[in-house]
Image (cartoon, rainbow, N blue to C red):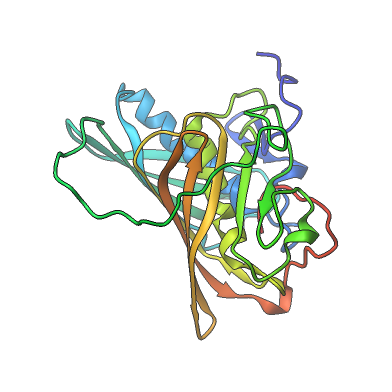
Length: 280
């Protein structure tokens, strides 16, 4: 594939290293990568090691990332190892490193699909989230900035959504590596970092920075267009927990959770209305 197939990407490969591209720059600091890029690179490594083991019949069902060091805008490596393999599951760990130092780690469980159990089980009666109309968000086109809904309707004008309402977002995933198509798992794993945007973004901007990402999925995403809608936000003594529902054009298929720390001295203020890439 021609390396110029994609105009947008998080990384360019250089041997065994991945060089972050300008799109990977965080809103918190100019020399810091955002979690969308880091999470996407980890997901790519996890997915690759499962495929190399010949377990393509399994689907990612649980994914967790610890973002314990701010990854810099510097050459980065990613590696994954299988921890446990069985007939119905595979457990995998991965790390992202810079200059030999681990910046983030991830773990994932890949499970074998079968059939739903027949017994009735309670499920939330709340209406499920729905994607924005296709005239606003075409399906799986090459790229567009994230779209949000809140107290204001769906739009890519961020200033309209700096309010205390319930936030939702719709993303078309950016390719992780230049010249590689983004897979559905890479899409949902990278976009899951935007859970911080839909749960921590309020009238004062984004005043919490997430330290982790957790995903629980019932099926594979049907494409690379993914939505998140806030289901709850709890905060006490500067520690916040935000939960969002994960959905695509075929409906809801999981939840995403972030744990965050108050970061009001370095608030991300989006009231200016300029669309931005990725998340805080």
